[in-house]
Length: 394
Image (cartoon, rainbow, N blue to C red; front, side):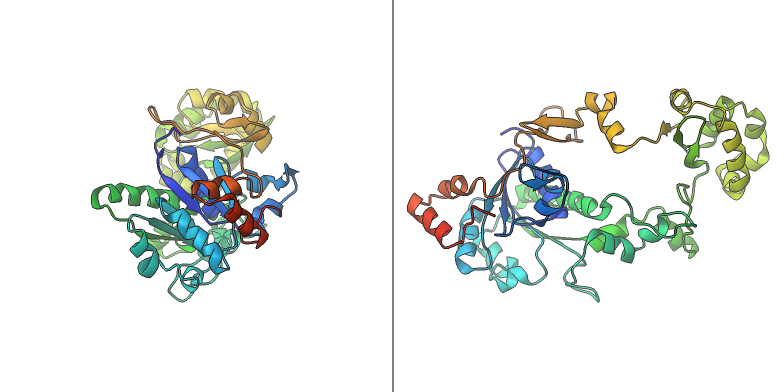
């Protein structure tokens, strides 16, 4: 095992996205992750098409570098196996409905922390355990709607729109990973584990920037701007003669460089556009001027010219084009291993780099291997399978 988390053992009893994405990050950086699935399997194994090797792409995208065991935790014998697995574990990640672990006799304060004082227990929930919405289930798109994220995404003619990627789930997974890393760092000083809760709703609220900061200061709701930015102008998508591009002007110097590249020196000198605040007040007129000028340009060539002059700009690409781009490949952000293809490891560490070492596990692929490492005899493993406590066929 290599990576910054080599030597850390994680038991992952979560499913779907936020939890598995968290543990995949830990696994990419060297942690030993054992994925514990219910007898029906992780829901995302069926979230397709496309399918390959018996599982949907959705599952394949967040479960690499893990070993897998299928265990029925709804029965006491299954939970006893889990407790044996936790004996030398550092981290437990789960996203069961609030109260499930306690009902199973696996309460952190009363049971797990007493039996495993160094264990870091990370729970991912929809809305947290308490409060008016406490204990309710939550899926990404529903939380997008309830948190205000959806209300700031979309164009006026189409109305509020779901963000195209499961941003809340993914960001919750990132926050859970960060919480686990902080807890492990603190444990190195105190010698004690702790309980972490990361709720989709809380994370969604935290993502409301700058719209949240704007509302706290002004009290005004955010109107839909399509691809435009509420605070910065021009920061938007524009058509050109060839392709759509996105231009992000963050300061007055960049605006002058943009105007120069488009042959609009008079616009750069116009007091209506001299500052960001002025450009915001005159957004429609400026956009019309830019549209007329951009219609004469090849978008790809213009973006390269702008970027090299210090103006952030880029063509709007589809997913396949982006994943096949030479820079994506150079940055090792598209990987292949044993027939598995996926996105790469975004955190680049100089001494302990992350890596893709194992394809996502098949259903129950490591049942016997993991149980054997616990010291279980072949007879005991066979009995667990016969009793359907450990399941080897979906």
